[in-house]
Length: 88
Image (spheres, one colour):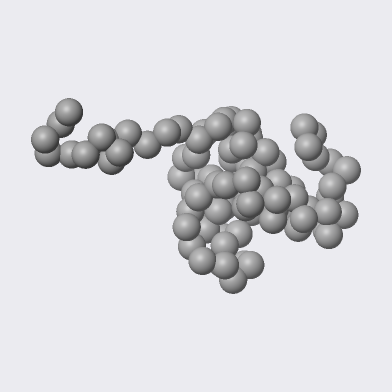
């Protein structure tokens, strides 16, 4: 064990690339993201998440979670974009 850093803080599990791709697709359909659908949380994805959180008036976490994905899904469906989504 590292005496300086507790084990729980030394590693952060990576995000599921499929979850990130689904979020990127929904952010793109909503006009918030213009990068590649690559499953990687880069600067463009972070910026899109920030715009989404600001636009929805929700706390800024910068995180892509299953709940945030559901929120993005609902926004797409309300905008009539649900039929353009692949993979659920």
